[in-house]
Amino acid sequence: MQSAEVSTQTVRAEDGATVHVRFHRRPDDPSAPVLVCMPAMGTRAVSYTPLAESLVQAGFQVVLGELRGQGTSSVQVRRGVRYGYHEMVTYDYPALFREVAAAFPLAPRHLLGHSLGGQLGALYLSQEPHMAAGAILVGAPSCHWRGWPFPQGLGLLAGFQFAAALASVYGYFPGRRLGVLGNDSAQLLRDMAAQVRTGRYDVPSSPVDFEPWLAGLDLPVLAVAIEGDPMAPPGGVRGLCGKLTSARVTYWELALGEGTVGGPHYRWIRDNAALVERVRAFVDRV
Image (cartoon, rainbow, N blue to C red; front, top):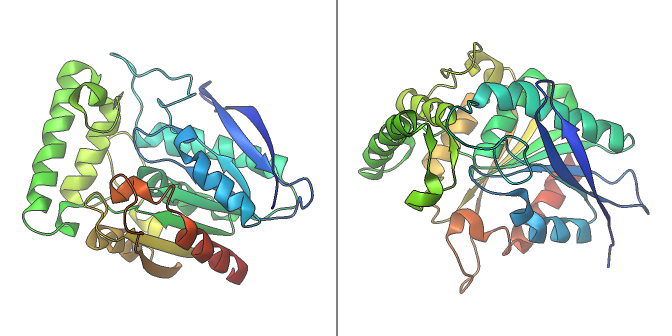
């Protein structure tokens, strides 16, 4: 069995925000590829520990990143705390990838982004593609409502506009109280609501229209849709793929095993054998 040396490092963004990140190193093979795992919205990095352990067994080194406002982030979600796509793409992802490059100087780096973590990772790499050799996007859709089948798409459109309005009034999005995702910034909800409505990554918090940047991203990409996933259906995943017109995109639908517990958007984190095998083949080919 492969073994990893696990440590925690503090990553500090340019605006002063910090996060404690877990590094799974392979002392026996420091040149083994590194997968930088970025979580879904409202999901703590520690939830991906079973995936990290399986990836180490498959010969990878792994870094479990954290989204702003979640888990070990120094940014606490409360009234008056504002952050959105801009802060995460401009400050958080660059700081993390620089830290990973310094910690693993001999190893190629790949993004492994889940859902919002994959979307934001694609936005970041569209501006700094030299920081990764490739990207694996799991359940990471463009959230445009037209990517969902009728009538779910209309429900998504209405739901996100309501959530953004509620967050503006409340001061933040009280997801834990509502039982939907986690607590998050009102600005983040406004950004997501805009993308759901327009289909464009041209959001209120950022001065950058990411659409032309995404079209110019020239990297190998493995885009994974999870069978039966209502939060990232094939139409949504293909919607994000369709923006990556310069990338070498491989689209794949993952079928999960019978009897595993939980919704498909998250169940693959533990039921991960098929995904790990496909990621190994993708990285080897890259």
